[in-house]
Structures are given as C-alpha cells and as structure tokens.
Amino acid sequence: MHRNPSRPLSPHLTVWKWGPHMLVSILHRVTGAGLSVAGGAALVWWLLAAADGREAYATFVEWATWKWALIIWIPLSWALFQHTLSGLRHFVMDMGAGFELPVNKFWANMTIVGSLLLTALLWAWIILEKGA
Amino acid sequence: MSMETPLGRVRGLGSSGEGAHHWWIERLTSVSTLLLLVWLAVSLLRLPALDHPTIVEWLAGPLGAVPMLLLIVSTFWHLKLGLQVVIEDYVHDDGAKLFWIMVLNFAAILAAALALFAVLKIAFTGSAD
Ligand code: HEM
Image (cartoon, rainbow over all chains, first blue to last red):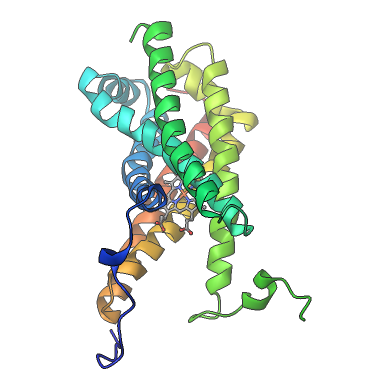
C-alpha cells in the first residue's frame, strides 16, 4: 500500500469506547459474508437439484432436513434477519438521519433484539406447526 | 450555498470514477433483494407442499420462474458488490486485490449462472422428469 510512514495515524480502535453500533457494524459485515457463502450455496443447490429431477431433489431434501443441518439453518436465518434489519438501519443513516448518539445506539440495539426475536419466532413456528 | 445534494456531488467520483455508482447499485440491489426474498417466503408458504412435483410446477410457470430469475440476479449482484468492498478493505496489495476480486467475480457469476440455468431448464422443459 502507498502509505507515508511519516504521517500520523488516526487514533485507533483502542481509544474508542465499545458500543452497540460497533457490534452491529461488524455483524452486518459478518452476516453479509456468511449469507453470501452459505445462503448462495444453498440456493444454487436447491435450484439445481429441482432442475435435475426427483432423485437429486430427494437427496437435497434429505440433507436440508437432517436434524444437524439446523446448525446451519438457525444461524443462517438469524444472519438474514440481522443483516436485513441492519441494512434497513443503513438506509435511514444514508438519508442522514438517526446519528444522535442515544437514537443511534437505541436502533443498533433494536436490530440485535429484533433479529433474535424473529429467529426465535420463526423456529418456534416451524417446530410447532411442522412438528420438525 | 450549493443546491446540489451530497449524492449529486459525489456521483462519478471515486478512484475508478464510479465509486458512487457502486454505492448506489448496492442500495438498489438491497431493496430489490429484500422485496424478492419476501416474495420467495410468501410463495413457499402458499405452496401446498414443498416436494419435487410442486416446486417444479411452480417454477415452470411465469409467476414462479420470472421472480426467481430476478431474485438470483439481484442477490448475486448485491453480494458480489458487497464482498468486493470487504476485499478492498482488507487486501491492500494491488496484485492480491486484483486477484481476489477476479476470484470473487468468477465465483459469483458462475454460481448465478448455475442457478439461472436451473430455473430456465425447469421453465422450458416443465415437469418432464
Ligand atoms: C441473502 C441475501 C443477502 C446477502 C447474501 C447479502 C450480502 C451482503 C454483503 C456481503 C455485504 C457487504 C458487507 C460489508 O461491506 O460489510 C452487504 C452489504 C449490504 N447489504 Fe446485504 N445481503 C443480503 C440481503 C440484504 C438485504 C435484504 C438488505 C436490505 C435491507 C441488505 C442491505 C445491505 C446494505 C445496505 C449493504 C451495504 C452496507 C455498507 O455499505 O456498508 N442486504 N450485503
């Protein structure tokens, strides 16, 4: 990288007080990357299996409904809720709103509470309704 | 005082002359991805079953195939732009950066093409299995 070492560095991570907005920023990136890899792969596999025929589709369903696959599905659904909620928060901040500290922290926290709540509701519904 | 909006001022700037364009398409595709994911969830909930014949019949029709094709384009475009920013943030060596952005582009386009092919195959050959 072209960095002039004689120039001062901006104050670094160590001097900032940790807050929910920082966690949400990191989560937006981590969930985005996770969704890209795991979500992208799942989508492609599902569609290719459907196009391939009955047998390939049965194999996909077997894997997807395997009980240990929940180790993927539950975090993946949470990631989608978290990324979507923090994405919506991005839109608000892109418009220049919600930067006052208390407001900013409140909505950062709300994306976390919201994504956990939505994940819990989704899986409670799936387990109760579908008897999974 | 300028009457120009902040967005108007940065449009066309950035190191590649299209930084704001990248930013804008990332917003556009996040909105379209969100709408299409809601469509997908509602569609799956409304299907009587999720078995092979039902899924294929649904994807063979225009109301299944067309939004699904759009969803694939929208999602993979959004994630390609998104992951590119992640690479630009962490890979500082110009050569390595170019390499990883190429890998990302190839992988994203390959995955999207496979998914598009699958939907088109179902749409054009129907439930013949
Ligand atoms: C499965 C679908 C999705 C995937 C795979 C995905 C993936 C990603 C990735 C990898 C990034 C880059 C993260 C970063 O730069 O730190 C990103 C950014 C972003 N995503 Fe998504 N995303 C998805 C859905 C959504 C939805 C539904 C929304 C809308 C609410 C959204 C809103 C955003 C926004 C606003 C950004 C830009 C953040 C920034 O500029 O820092 N995404 N996405």
